Each structure stands twice: as structure tokens, then as C-alpha cells.
Image (cartoon, rainbow, N blue to C red; front, side, top):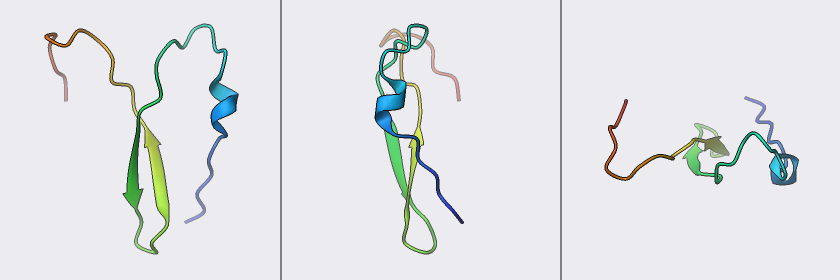
Length: 50
């Protein structure tokens, strides 16, 4: 699998995206690392959706 990664600086200064970067690193079958971005925002005592 060819893994593409957008440079982090491409996300700097986005006015409509005020979220901090959160990444999960997953090892692929060939040993490569796949970085997945996710949004982890909201009230600490708010509801959780899965």
C-alpha cells in the first residue's frame, strides 16, 4: 500500500478548523507506520459517541 502524508504545516492557519492534531499510529503488515488523524474535542463530561 502506498501511504501518503500531508505535511503538518498545510493545516496551520485554517480559520474554520480550530482543533488540535491528534494522531494514532498503526503498524501495517509490511511494518510501515500509518498515521491516522482524529478529532477528540468537546466537554470532558459530555456524551460519548462510538
